[in-house]
Image (cartoon, rainbow, N blue to C red; front, side, top):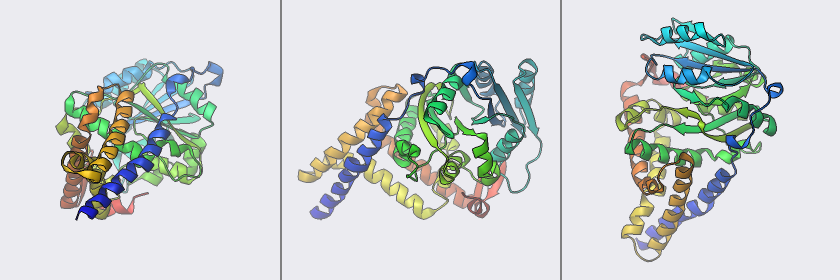
Length: 384
């Protein structure tokens, strides 16, 4: 039994010493948006910012105010009101009346074979004219110089596709625990530095901000290819990478920020439809993800506390590297370094959310999204 535990903790330590350190080193090399001077007018290609909004009357006004205040000479904003039942449509129309760069498209009905958000983004694209398309969300806030810096970064790095890692607003302890761990897990899963490597299969797409050259987007088949894809943002990045276009990731911090699902209960409910989808609606993949979450993020702390001899040594190595990884994310997010100590707690709660997402989706036989039900088998057939 002792040899079994030794082998197990040896495997965990090997993971952190090889793959973990590799990803951490790559993260240190990611470009920062603030390091790129805002592009001059002559170097600013026409950009269309596209987003879909459904019943967003609470968050939309604040985000929209920052978007129409962006300092960019060739800016077009296309907002799609996706069958809203609150004041969203009125808010958009009133804003468009005062800001000519904003165009509003109203969707009254959802065609068969489409999820609401991909359909709305397809409609936004069809109404746009920009050389570059920025896909974002209705609750995302932009700093005035964000797009000029993005234009400079994309030009300098010769990118066809760029995803930005922005700030996520937090309301308290639980938000911070989950968001910091989620950020760490996202980096490990996506290996962000490898996204720009054409020989790597790594890809990423961020819903809050991803910019894509129009010709590349059209070559991919636009959002028609993502008509039934729940995690359409990530899968757009996958299509870009598979097609051989140049993709990249940069750190934006508060240049782009999002008011996500604030509060523990809202976070859990907000991720209900996503986690099982991210696992490809596969129970086997969910089992592997749960094993990985607990084995690499919780077990080392238990081994350090209750193990002995080499088991404790190997656990200590794993804990040290994992905490260092978490600390790096804490520094980028500008939160207290003490949050690194919540790493096993974050992993445990994420495990619960993943289990909950899986059980609810299987029990319902599908998901509810934007007040529409989609059957599980239909979603599986539509996966990219």
